[in-house]
Length: 175
Image (cartoon, rainbow, N blue to C red; front, side, top):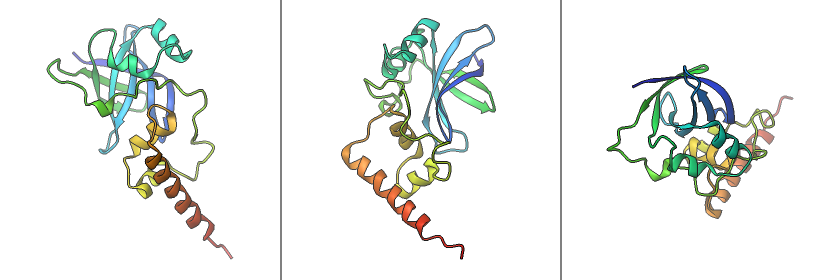
């Protein structure tokens, strides 16, 4: 069964929507999370979510892990098509389990204000910093949005990559 979604609200954005709310044709809500960005289209997982639980997430009463680890309908979906503000989600077979790295960390709440917003650092793209740090861009976006927390070693790696990018920017001369 395919579920046709329209993007209703983007909750976290870093180069692409990282976490968004989709609405199906009959008004059902789905929380959609980018879990990989290695292909042409990022891979998203989705779970149906009631208005009550969505409000609890937005108000900080429940975490992202709880919503994705224990979906209300007892099933996960994967988005197979995502173009502009429309997506198509299909159920993930019950025989498959989600890889642990796809789930947000326990205790990861929606950030009140993300650490790095695209409009603040427009010249610094997350994908460029991730490449410089030798890491997956989706993982870096999850760190920046607060969905996952980097280890001290990973945080240092990102910081060093940002410093290297900044040094190269400082070397630019127009005269």
